[in-house]
Each structure stands twice: as structure tokens, then as C-alpha cells.
Image 1 (spheres, one colour):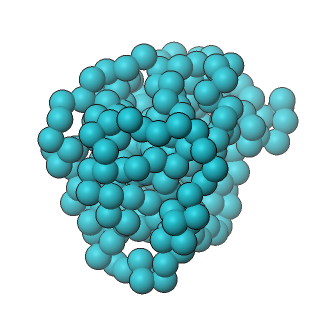
Image 2: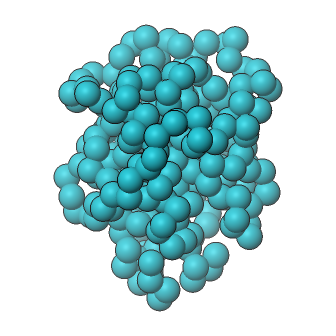
Image 3: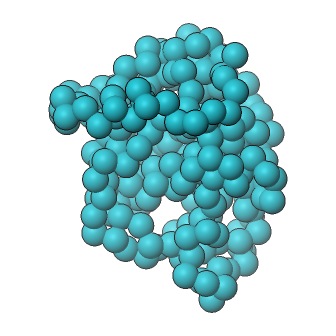
Length: 216
């Protein structure tokens, strides 16, 4: 996801692993410590240097395909996580980036909204694998942009209160993120990417799409 400045081996593709789904729904994970673990995570835990990758733009096919569940513990996953963070950091206005945006069709993304003026709750920089929304409420419409759709922005309705679960790269531990406002929007935007959806798929119609006047 990019800031909307006008207004604001990884494994072959396969069906979703039932073990991932069952673990993500484990009630034992509804734990404040799981949320604080995300807030204290840093990319230094990955232990590898991230490489800047080229960002794929629509209509590339990888952007419209649901990503495969990923083994978060492999060296390839750790390197991809580091690469996502490195690419996000050098991309102006970027507050999140998904694996398929760098051409890799797996369910992984990074987010960091800590410097955005509309942020309330935030967890700093984090990467999640195989993330799923657990709870979502209080929908609100706001403008979004995307590194993979650089010429347009759009008004998208999303939940402003959110709880998601996913795995940290490297350790594979399951964690939970409870958030709101802009970070909630960014996380939903990135989860959409892992599901093969762009913000353009969420707008109400052509009337809700606008030319970008500040380019990335």
C-alpha cells in the first residue's frame, strides 16, 4: 500500500493448508502477549540483509492470483521478508508491500505506518505470513493508493477496527495484531494482495477512482 498523498524453496502454488487454517483459528492465540510480540519485532531478527526488488505493476497476472500458503521458517521465506522490508523502505510513500507485488505468489506482506500522520495505533515494522482476518468492524470509506497501481487512487470502504493472525518469518510463531484506523486499513490492503485483489477490486465503481496527482 502506498500513502495517498492527494488526501491523505518457498513452495509451489497449492491449496490452502488445513493446518494453517486450524492453527490460525486457535482460541489460545487471543492473547495480548501475541500482539506485543509484533510490536517488539524488528527486521534485525531475520539475520539477513534485504535486497531491493522491482515492484510489479497491474495488470501482471501474479497480482490477481491468490498466493500460496508459505512455510515461514525456510531461508527463502526469511530472505523474502527482508527483501519486502528493504523495498518498502526505499519506495516513497510506501507503508506496506506484499510478496506478489515483487512477483512472488505467496501469502506474505510487510507493513510500517509509524510515520503516517493519520496513524493512531501502530506496531512499527512487521512482516506476517499466512495472515487471516479474525475480527473486523466499523467500516469507513477512505482514499487509497498502491505501488502496483501508480496512476490511480480510489475510495475504499474498510474496517477501522481489526484483529488478524499470522506467522512471523523465521520463527514461524503465530501472533496476533489488534489495530485500528490507518494501520488497520494498510493491513487489510496487504491481505487483499495476498488474496489476489487490488484496491480497484474494492471500489464502488468508476466514480470512486481518481488520477493520482502526486506520483510515487
